[in-house]
Image (cartoon, rainbow, N blue to C red):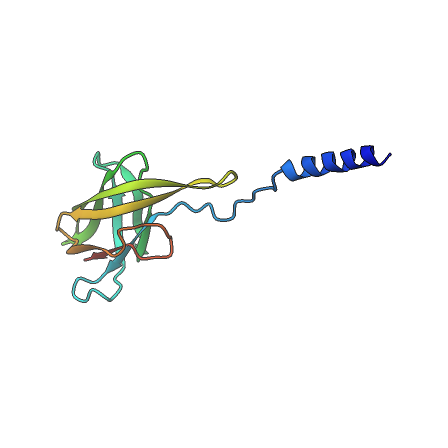
Length: 160
């Protein structure tokens, strides 16, 4: 009688030890690039931008900030490529006319997918970020963090 009890206990132990605990994904935050705007006169003073849009190279609006004032932008870069071009179009009024001034930002980076867990899957990060820009209304672009693996950092400073 003891042998069947031991076999039943062993079988129960094996069944329950083979089950996986439920995965709950709390940290499935793929990162984005934080662009923060600063004054060109003093690179440490925040300077918001109003009346501008983000455009793709075809001139299609990616994001419109026409009626808002923005101090920073969270930008998700495509993970299926290693380069991304974006036009920042600023609208100003000169003698009653609206004038659009464009600056093109060229993002070069290496996308990286990191496995977190079965429930969370993969998260997206970027390495080797560099940015080249034209100089119309943007004075300078500074990459503060070329390794983008957190949403809490100021990755890029745009001086205007």
